[in-house]
Amino acid sequence: MLALSEVLTMASPTQRPSHNEEGDGAKGIKRPYPLRFRKEELVTRRVLVLGAGNQGQVIAKALSSQSSVEQVTVVDIDEKKLGLLAGTPKTFGFRADVRGETLRLLLKNCDLVSGALPSELGFHAMKEAIDAGVDMVDTSFMQEDPLVLNALARKNEVSVVPDCGVAPGLSHILVGHHLSVLKAVEGIHIMVGGLPQSPKPPLGYVITWSVRDLIEEYMRPARIIRGKTIISVDPLSESNLVDVPGLGKLESFYSDGLRTLLHTVPDVESMDERTLRYPGHVDKIRVLKDCGMFNKEPLFIEGCRICPRDVTAEILSRVLSGENEKDLTILVVSVSGKENGRRVTLTGQLLDHYDERTQFSSMARSTAFTNTAVCNLLLTGQLKEKGIIPPETLGMNAGYFGKIVDYLQVQGICIEEKEYVD
Image 1 (cartoon, rainbow, N blue to C red):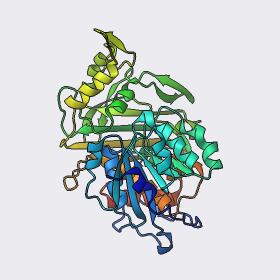
Image 2: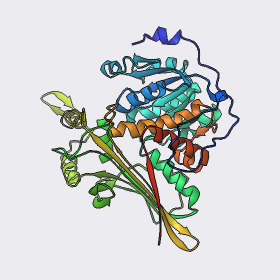
Image 3: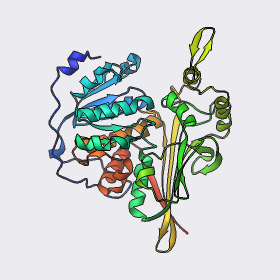
Image 4: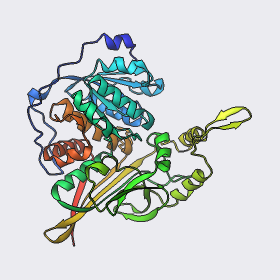
């Protein structure tokens, strides 16, 4: 692990490549050939990865393998997590709290930030990166609206892609791609789930990402669109069973994953995101929620101040540990509308499984590789827009979309697209 003085005395960030060429990927989904970048694009860069959890680990390892990356520095408060990166080429761990002054010092010595922090830290880290004039690709499930930082990012000539995981992230990229094909859109519906390959008691679930953000998903009001109007609903209030291709019947409930789509696609008749779980999961979560186990308000028990959510998070992290558990990720994006007088529905589906060779969980793979696919667009100088860049706008650009999908396929993550006409 590096000391701060070692990080700061290393070579200064390399000069950014000129942005003089548009992305030029093809529109198709599956390609047998590997990614190729023009030689003039290969200017080595220094990357700062914030967070060494499941997603951060995969991001760091993926970026360290890129010829365009000179060095990867990974920051986390947990020394044990950083230790898991030992032996990764060109990668250094640094123990620090990103809420302190240390982050500002580290930002002075990097060209790009990849954010894989818990939701409560994401907005702070993003603003710090923008203040420092450093491009960023972020995955955090922050409650704040990243678009409020757009003016500042433009002023500082910074490119920031928020919500760039599997959902939100890849889900939005697919929506953008479908919007570029189908012009008169009426409905957008997203279903996503990270699940054990078989249900595990007591909740039919294992944790493959931040346990605190998992709880947040059950508590945060979900914003959806009904009748062209944005409304907020209790995420657990309208659960139902759905048939999912390849997996059968699963339980679905609303989650607050639309994010920037609420602003970039405001006139659609209906739009929502639903999270998928094995049947019976929602009723068990409702019991925990109704008992106050997810509350943040502290209790005083025998003179001790105790936060119910903190206790529940700790218990769930132990009971639902996903270590060595084989998982899967399912993502189904559906965009419907009218074309030439016919009702058309375009779908994109991802069904990914735990990787036996790398021992990466499916959720970590699908989240991290979406992030690093977009990082590559910045590292190679292809993505040149400035400001806060919603991921769906990348899908609307055929060149960017082709590059992202090409990269994902090289990683073994394939998307199946279908068209249905009534």
